[in-house]
Length: 219
Image (tube, rainbow, N blue to C red):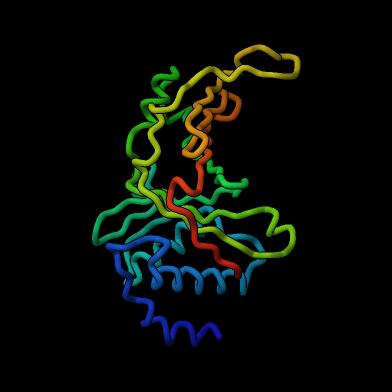
């Protein structure tokens, strides 16, 4: 029962904040409990501000002044003792990779590609924390989540080989659509910046092994 959870939640209060990783059993147990209670009420997956809120409660179990929407540009949650900042993302599992979306650059960066590249290359948060889903599981009514936690310095957009996104089909085939493709090593990561019609949104494809694997929850 829900009341039993709150009576016994003190056992979750201690989190080793020097080991906020997928190997931290206390953290994993706390997240799992919150996912279970979410799905005790809702059939829809945890994502967006709900994932930010769950994560913030787990890393700051004794409370904080967190407000949904982030403390600073690019950071969604902050651990109040260490001041470590996190970007919380959902993401989709695609084979050995996870696909996430990030900044909308139309308003956040300047008009040129160099402006956009410089903006996304800043360290907006110390770490990424992903709660990603495999749509194949969900279509089979398997409520699964993959938790991934990794340092943001593992993603260096200036290391990628960038080129204009040239359309391969449609009436504008062969033309630059305003976006850019960033190619990298297949066992690391790649990226794409959409054209103006999509607010210049940044998409990142990351090899799961490169960022240290994942912990899988089945709720």
